[in-house]
Every structure is written in C-alpha cells, then in structure tokens.
Image 1 (cartoon, rainbow, N blue to C red):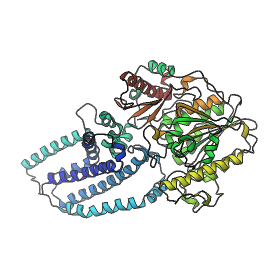
Image 2 (cartoon, rainbow, N blue to C red):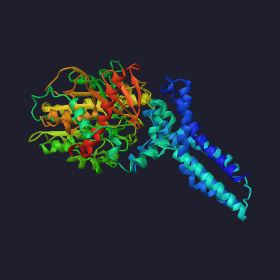
Image 3 (cartoon, helix red, strand yellow):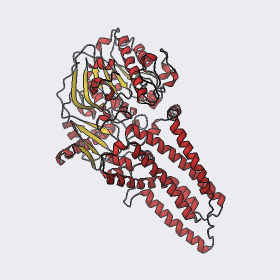
Image 4 (cartoon, rainbow, N blue to C red):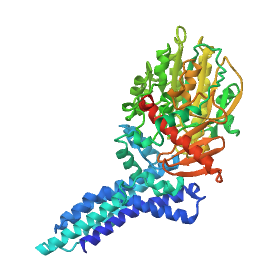
Length: 623
C-alpha cells in the first residue's frame, strides 16, 4: 500500500472517533438539542469536523512527519503506528470522560483536570463509580487493537530514494505539511480557530455539539497562559465603570440592622439544587425538612443563581466577589497572581472578626488549605481534622467527607468564640457529591446506589438531618442569638433534574437568624458575587459600591440582573428575560421576540459587567 494512502486511512480512523463521540453526545443528551431544526443540527455536526481536525492533527502531527519520511523500514512504520494507536486510545478515553461530564454541566471539559491537582484518589474513586463504563471502553479499545494490528502490519511500498524520487518525496512532504498546517489553524484568517468560532452559530447547545472536549481542554490550557486586558475591553474603561455603577442601588433596607457586629455562619451546601428543596421549588419531596423549617422563619431569595456549575467558581465568587471568566484562571490555580482585589474574610478579620474555614473534604482539596490562609481565614479544618462520630456502612466510602461530623467540628471550634469579638465561619459540605456514599441507617429512605438519583436523595436527607442536628447543638451557646446564618449551594446537581435554562443554575439562598424570625420571599435576581457586599453590609462595613462587581442583595429590586458563565459564552438574567452572548455575538434570548433595543441593553450590561470585573480584579479601574 502507498504510504500516503495508509496514513490517510489512519487519520480518517482517528477522526471517526471524534465523530462517533459527537453522535453519542447528540443521542444521549437529545433533550438539549431537540428544539433545533434537523438542518441546523446537521450543520453543527459537520462544522465540528473543523474543530476535530484542528486538535487531532495538532496531536498527531509529529507522527505524520515520521511516517512521511522516506524511510523504508517496515519495523519503523509499525512502531510509529502502534504509538499512534496508544494516542488514539488515550483520546478515546478522554472523550468518553467528556461525554459523562457533559451530562452534568451541558458543556465540555475545559480546565477541570487542572483543578484536580494531584488528587489521584478522587480519580480512582470516580473510576470505581463508573466501573462498567470504564470496563466497556477498555474492552472496545482492546477489541479494536486486534484490527489495528492487521492495519499496522500492512506493508507500504518502498519509496524511491533516487535523486528524482527524493525530490518527489520532498514535494509531497511540503504539500502534506501545508495541508496539515491549514487544518490545524482551521482558518485562513490572521488568528487560528478558537472556541469562540463555534458560537458563530448563535446557539449555545449547537455550539457545544460542534466542539469536542479535547479541543476545549487544550485550548483552555494554552489560552490561559497569558491574560491580556484586551480580552475584556469592549468599551472605554470609564464608560463601563460608570454604566455598571449606575445600575446599582443605594436604597438598602437591612432587616438585621439592630444586631450590632453579628456573628455570621455561612454554609455552602454541595449540589443542593432549588429543585429538591420544597421551600424553594414548591414541590412536596420532603427531603429537606430542616432547611424548609428555617426557610419558614427566614428570608428566601427565590431567584438566586450560581455563576457556574463548579464548586471552586462558587467559592471564588462568594469569598472574593470575582465571577468565573474565560481566559482567567480559577482561585488556587493562578487567579491569585493577577487578582489585586480585596476579599471578604480579610476585610472581616481586619475589622475585628475571628475567621474560621472548615470543609468536609480533605484539607488540600482545591488547595483550599492554602487558599483559606491566603485570603484571611485564621483557622482552617479539613477531613484530616474531623473524627468519626456516627456509625456508617463504610465510613471511608464518602470521598468528600461526612456532613454530620463536619458540623460537629464547627460547633466545637466555635465553643469559645463570640464572647470578646464576633466571628465569621465558612463551612463547605460534601456528602451530597457523587459518588453518593450510603449514610447512617435512619437517613436511608430509598434503594441506595452510589451514582443514581436515589443515592443522591439519601445523602440529601442525611445532609439536611445533619444541618438540623448542628442547629440543635449550637442553639444552647451564648453566641447563638447574635448569629446570622446564610445557606446556599455551590451549584445545582445538574444530572438528574430536568430543568430549563436558567433554572438549571438556580440554587437556594436563605438568610436566617434566631433574633429575627420572619418568613419573607424576595424575587429580585441575585448571584453568588452579590454575597461579599451583602455580608459586609450586614456587618456594617461596606461603604464602597465600586469595590465589588456584585451588589448587596438587600439593595436589589426587580430591575436587578444576574450573570451566568458557561465557558465560551455567558448569559444575563433580568426578571424573566435572559440573553446569551459569546462575547462577540448575541446568541439565544428569551422571549424569542425580544426587541432589539432590549437585546442591545442586556448585551451592554453583560459586556460591561465582565470588563468591570476584570478591571476590579486587576485594579485597572483605579488607574
């Protein structure tokens, strides 16, 4: 066989992997794409080949060079083709992981593997959770290895190494190299193809059908190396700053103003979607009676959104007030090298607060042990500091720790606090994270499994029970009556409830205090980035509207907005309206017949929001 033809077949086999995976995504997550026409879906799938070629040829280009060399050794050819098979196997496994991840967040992998750091135990646990899928994929890879052997064994015609033959080979080499270069760039424009090019379709779902997880991941890693202010430069800085400031409100009414220097306990609940909390969904699942009871005596924010579907993004937004942004690394993964803005815990500490951070997961999960110290927490506790109290079927099965023991550790840490000065405590739960470890018997209501909705529901029942036990334990303490509790979730669960946008980003937000029991539902649109100025407002410390992109939620009204980041695009929600934007193009909007003037207005808010966020973060708005 001609070496060029054999190489072409090898490339086509590799591209087939990407194509099949794209069809799997389309089939498995059909509900995400069903509202689009058959023709637009077909075009999105075909457009995806452009992105597949770009990333695939980037990876295998060294092997293409080796196989095009006028080397007549059949052994050399076999070795190169077997190395390519190994690369194909890795690509297949990565793309299958991407398919699973897609089911949780409706988008592809980007920088998620980077945020795992060296957490090999987590990777091992997730592999066990999806054991059968791992087994099937490895079996398929091994099965095709048999056919690849036959393919690799095909002998190529020896190249003519005469002077004329070498010149001919050189010409073919140059032509092939030029073709590969063009496909890698994916464009004849001055800039090579990027994620943003997929969104020219004008539809977020179709853009994600066009993309593949390998392209988005490698582009994320390469594009995050350099952060340029030009990325978020849509208007004159002063214009963007003044516009965002003009949208903020000054007429604030704090229901807790009579509590001077209150203690503040912030509880970040892992994957507690509003969908599963009766007080916020209006349903009757009866999974969270304790939070429902507190909600009946507290202030509920019915339209609160997480800015992204990742825990570290929620923590970043809540503790720093910085929203997740494309081309900007996350907290703990480089953000600290460019962020010059202040942060919540430091401000509270500087104003006389004790600060405590505790999470149920391991101390170094997301590097939170280092992060907590660097942003103003004086005490930090993780899984290694928490002792087992209850009997569980398997105590070690909970990869992210047990909520009950974590709450009791916090109760113990707060025993001697609140006497001479107030405290700010931040607790991040973890039992409701997949894989769902079976909790203590009294909280198992459904047939348990580590990767099903019933498994999640059991852990949610347990997590809510643990919360109730925490409140019972600390209500005897002197500091209790002078304490304000804030409850919200890092992000939605995402993979079981079938929610339409933007409800698929909606999480509970409840503010409750034993000193102020009043059931109140607030309908203004809020976001995690609003939490730092809100807490500072509660503490009587925030007098600078421009210090955070967010706004004190007690100042907001029905003209307020919330911004959600979906990587490669973003969305702004205002009342019942929303608009998605790729940072270059407007995408979908609701209602579909929205006036162009309103689209332009929402677009300006969104783009100014990101420009001002970047400028606040890097202190550009102070220059």
